[in-house]
Length: 135
Figure 1 (cartoon, rainbow, N blue to C red):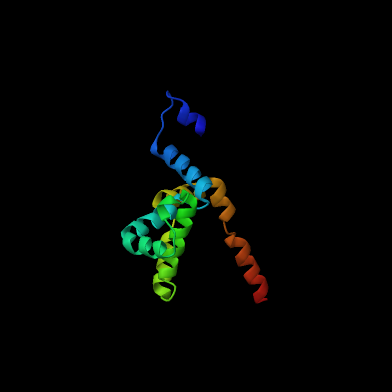
Figure 2: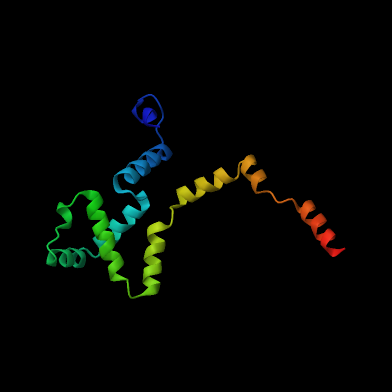
């Protein structure tokens, strides 16, 4: 994959770039790219509150290494919804719901003939088993 990015004659499409970005973020932050992105979208939406709360504790979020800042931001967001089960469930869902491009990739992987065959259910065998139990 990396060789293709560095090969200037190779067509580099969005799928490849997304895969590279996903792997880099996973390696740097230890969590999926869409989770990191959601954390920072939410933090930036309530920046004065997050920054103020952390400054009162002597923590400068901007000066932390990126992975540690992301973990700290996630902890603050999680703490804000700890008393509300609905908001906590929504936050968890938003952090861990895969983007459509990943879901679609899983679907196309699952629709290969091998995957379909592996998931196949032998209705005739089930019917025969049901007949045996009726006797």
